[in-house]
Image 1 (tube, rainbow, N blue to C red):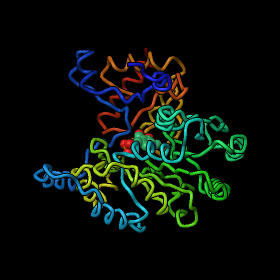
Image 2 (cartoon, rainbow, N blue to C red):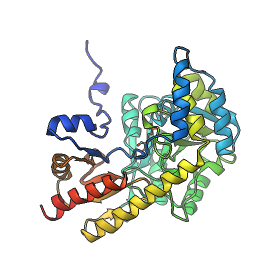
Image 3 (cartoon, rainbow, N blue to C red):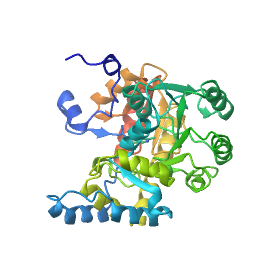
Length: 368
Ligand SMILES: Cc1ncc(COP(=O)(O)O)c(C=O)c1O
């Protein structure tokens, strides 16, 4: 069977290296994975309880209307349930948005070094990716983004903004976001997606979610995930918040049972557990502050982050550093596929994991 060239040319999304694989390959008992921006606390106790009681019903198909989950979401985000839909992770929603709004040879636009899923999805649909330049190395550049858009106006169908951004951890501040929305609100046939997977980890005073602009911006979608703050990456649950016409278009495209019964039960419980959200924030912020202090002491450059991870500069071939760290039982994330061959991304873990990662980085980068 001949596989079409546009599929053969795709580069598959490269996830973090699994713990078990690293244990097998390197003959290690103890391996810490700080590579996928997961929640080191696991899912909340309320979620675990909800999962246990939902197990007995798993011979039944899940609720295709996601009724209870929508109700919980409406309360949690303080919007109407008709402005919400859920997906098998935000990954799935991103995929459908591209398939709904783009046709072959169309373009999507995003800032340089954005989340790789946008590119992977676009490739499968023969949609071209256009990257807007940054300023001062890592910062979102509004003028350049608009300039890039205007050059490609006829072809650009979606603008993706991960805010905060993965893998850099940088963010678009509230003033810039408002100016950005003021401009793009008028571009009626272009969809604007604010991917706020890391929203709950932000500490910057001038960060603002795009959520409050849904009412005034017809062409806006806000994405939230349950994989990070809620510790449910394995269950696959993501949300999209948007105007009813966009939600209805997505609901026509998604499969009726795209969100499993377990994910629905877990999502409802997760949104009720404010204490767990606070606990995760505390653990994340303490971990980040520890990383900043230790990386500064070791003179390893890093970008201050609004996510649950930090991007550090190895000043050398990061893949080699990654390999050496693996041998010490530490899995970080190389980001060469983002065009950053000297950087590694380090997720916040438990205290013991963070300390082990810093110790290994010191051995490899400073004393090695
Ligand atoms: C910016 C961004 N968006 C979306 C996702 C995907 O989340 P999900 O697990 O909901 O598919 C990630 C995961 O790392 C991410 O970094």
